[in-house]
Image (tube, rainbow, N blue to C red; front, side, top):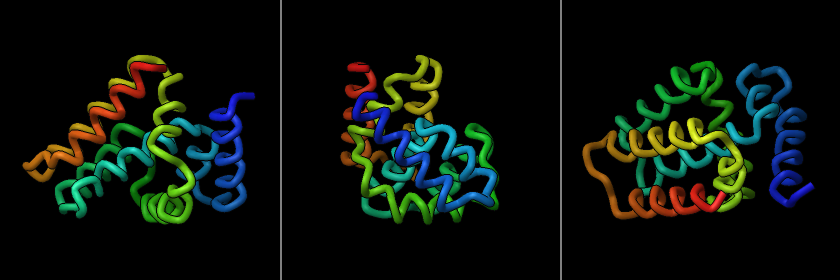
Length: 140
């Protein structure tokens, strides 16, 4: 088992233990790549130092419409990411995603760009996160 696979497996196990009753959290526990995607989306939302209402709405829309999560579960998901997301670097998240099919990688990049554009201003820190993510996904 590689370091990234071990990390992803351990993260999924922790999530199952912590959020057993929540349908969206069970989805995350069964799909470490989904957790990695969400982590990068949250980090893009905060990349410029604050989350504008438009960015929060874009995040919610992506989670519900594109990722199939329940809107009512997003609070629990964000709480979990806040509590445990620091354990995952952007590099680790991108390494998990790098193993996915091209279509899923492209969807993530599209979602990151949507959040970055949502407030009408693409900050240099948002550009940097997007560029770093693209570069990491190319390596996978």
